[in-house]
Length: 226
Image: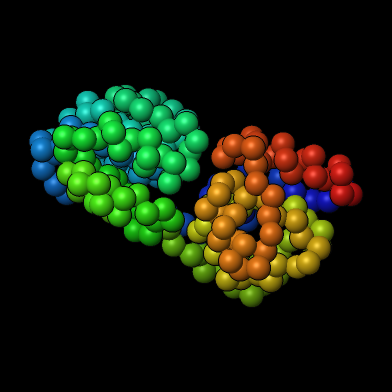
């Protein structure tokens, strides 16, 4: 039976998981009073902000500002921590999400909490449409350092089915490993699939950008191609 391997940020039991990145959270330092809308495109932006809120009571008013979330998982994380979710993206892809929220953000003062590097052009599109917004880099996705022996131990077997849950994880994988012809790739979303395609790797795309949809696809491929 072909092995299913996640290239992800945390272990997904009972499957082999390659955690090749680590997150660095940065404190948010600003006056929150001008803002009446927040944008979150990642759960990690929420986790970073929560770390800041532990030591910055004045920023806790951000939890009462309407939040626009890219996806259901991000929205659930916000709701679990008592944020006020105003909108959840239907397709959970950056380009579609920004088009969904543009009409909703007119005449608003927006705070976009983001990673140091982003895959979408959400910030550029907001600027082009005259949205009043400020960006704050609250986390960074960094490559883990792996020794040669660690790389050897982690290298997936031939014919493995690899699930890439973000561009950053795909980049990290290709930094450390060669993508063998016998591997099968699954992308969680369009941007990850496009990145892999630019590296000469064709991938299957899940029906929707969720871990559950990726796993369902991987298990169906394992049965078909074993």
